[in-house]
Amino acid sequence: MAGRIAARGDLIPALAEIFREHGFAGASLSEITERTGLGKGSLYHYFPDGKEEMAKAVLDDVANWFENNVFAPLRESKDPAAGIDQMFRAVVSFFHSGRRVCLVGTFALDETRDRFAAEVRSYFTAWTEVLAAALKRSGFDTKSARETAEDVVAGIQGALVLARAQNDPALYMRAIKRLRQRTRITGAG
Amino acid sequence: MAGRIAARGDLIPALAEIFREHGFAGASLSEITERTGLGKGSLYHYFPDGKEEMAKAVLDDVANWFENNVFAPLRESKDPAAGIDQMFRAVVSFFHSGRRVCLVGTFALDETRDRFAAEVRSYFTAWTEVLAAALKRSGFDTKSARETAEDVVAGIQGALVLARAQNDPALYMRAIKRLRQRTRITGAG
DNA sequence: ACTATGCTGTACCAATCGGTACAAAACTGG
DNA sequence: CCAGTTTTGTACCGATTGGTACAGCATAGT
Image (cartoon, rainbow over all chains, first blue to last red; front, side, top):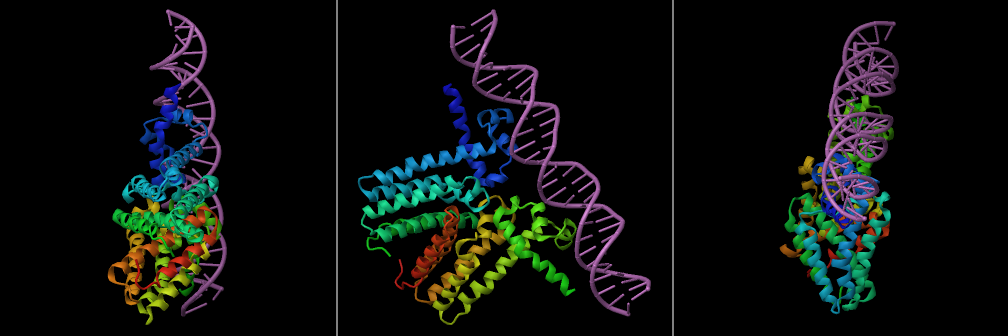
């Protein structure tokens, strides 16, 4: 019983990596069987609805990770600046310092978005909203908190695209550093 | 003779749209024949190397468009601010005010990047460099010109991702407005 | 030790993939 | 009107796609 749930969960990281590299459509069952070491029998045992269910599980896992490591700190940290610092630390570690791409961003760009519309949308809206709230608590006025939050989330996504396009993770780290600075300037604009 | 080159060129916009929507791997020959109205015979007549050649032609067309409408103005405008203004106007029109996604960004995220590594890389490096040079001419010091250029290009890409994820083109327009502001603040930082 | 359930591998399926071959059609220059 | 070339549609190819069926193995409960 416990073993079953653990086994299913153990597949998620491998699945996530495959979807990140190839997108939803490009992730083939054959590669999934190879890299998980499991045959189709096992795969469809854990995920009766096939690829779609696997992707859902991965998106769910990502949402969970962000809830715990990004949103909760932003929401609950007594010092909002500490929560924001934690967010930046988390996204550096999650995206492997710019060597890893954002799975949700990958899904967002092609027709996959429509299949997982709710998950894709809420990933970004939740992030932007909870960051805006933290910025507001740290002294930003409502408008510039919202604006800065959008700029930061978009800036992270864009930096991931550029870093991968130019094969230069350092670009991502530079961008993160600057975005972090911007969350500290009080007057804003 | 002239008809032939024109006919091939006439396919590019349709091809570009298909690649934008589905990515390289997801763009199927069957959809390409449907939406171009041409059979495989004609397609392989104009593009003997198949999908790869079609994608190359599309990337080439994009590079050309940016050279003419973005890079050249940034490079040659007597008033650098005017060149920068033209750039923002161009990217608003090119990405259909946020309703359209960046084809190169789409290619950059999955394994397609490796197939078109040179084109994908140079799209972003050229853009960043020529923008940085324009910013420098308009009064930014070397370092902050480079930084702002990276932020702007990444910011545009990220805004496209968010706008599409949330199905909210207005988000893109807001981001563009703010990025444009940032290119005008002289002291920078 | 026996049974029930969880798990796994393999064989198989129709559909679709990108690509090729080629003959008929359309067009062009003389 | 004819000859030569460009353009086109169709039939076909092997390979791969996501998914199903199912028999056999392992494990756990009693």
